[in-house]
Image (tube, rainbow, N blue to C red; front, side, top):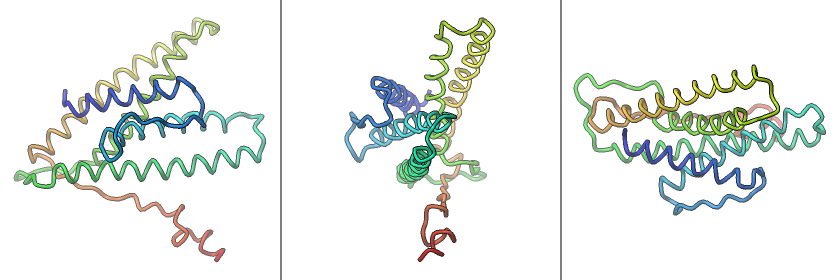
Length: 202
């Protein structure tokens, strides 16, 4: 296994477990890694994903007060922007890491950047944590328990496969078999100069 991906899995598992010590969307993050390091950004990435998972649960409460729902929706929007910004920062790390690699003749371009693949890996860790909770529930029917166990097996297979594929992708970048290329998201709806609803208010 690629050692970077192995360490990434360890950090994601650590972050989701740390969040669930309080299991509170308002709990302050205590990032154990030095700011400016890739480890710091990976931990923060999973923390954001874990908090947003719980915000998505909260906003689906059919009894939620509409005013509170709006506040939670705004918070989710802000979280999505933070997530995108962080993914792009992680991609900048890879751009720098592979900056001097000369592509081989016939080198291929991947469909997504490494950081967006790592984004999926982070969310997968959050899914696995919560599916384990469902498997452990005692008050559900045998049928429900069996369904959750089957889903758990699929998620674990996805984790293994995604870990392998990201490792292979990074190895290909290092060898020049793939060309490291990033397209920034350029999201428009949060930009007051590009969203017509926002710039029309000026």
